[in-house]
Length: 294
Image (spheres, rainbow, N blue to C red):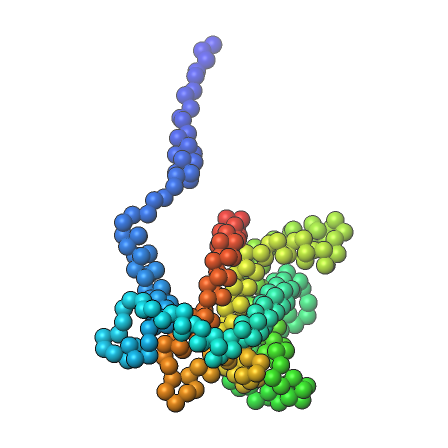
């Protein structure tokens, strides 16, 4: 009996696929040029603010305008700090923006988890109503909100600015959309089978899965709360201001000093830059981690 030997073809595609998957992509010259252009365009307003803050008001009015730094930066920064009372304003803005950020991230994550993974009556209708509130202009709520805060006796107090922003419809919808894909339902069911309570599931399952989105939402919320101007200028006064309300006082003179105004704007922007430099790496790392897991 003759034994026929079969020659099996070699599987080279898998090896090539693995080699291709592990190969690093390198950016070409065009990529560096495009990224450099975008970086310069993005930094141009900040650089111009710093240049204007280092000049005199008379020099800023000349043509052509200055294109390099002058020698009055620290003098203008000190003038803006003293005139606007930015010491108290910085502390108030940190309290307001920090409280709003923590509460928005916490409540939006809980509400987003409920809409994404829990089953309850009228969940679709409630989600639709939540999204619908995003279409209402915030200017329409200024008068009734001011009357409500006056009835509570909170005029010119920080809680007047904090309370209306403890949770946002955008944050709830953002976290709901993320958790629908990032949090497997089987993982929640397995935790319930193991006897975990709802609070333990939220702490040990939901929060770790939602961490990348929570970091992004926290950064966006902090920037928005720090830069908010419309409601704080109505609810607060110059004796107890946030940064944006305090900076508004720099342009109220008969002849506003543009250099001092730019110096104040630079001081108001520095905390945001510091926050991004300190936490930007962790935020980007969390986003990438969530993308790889997804």
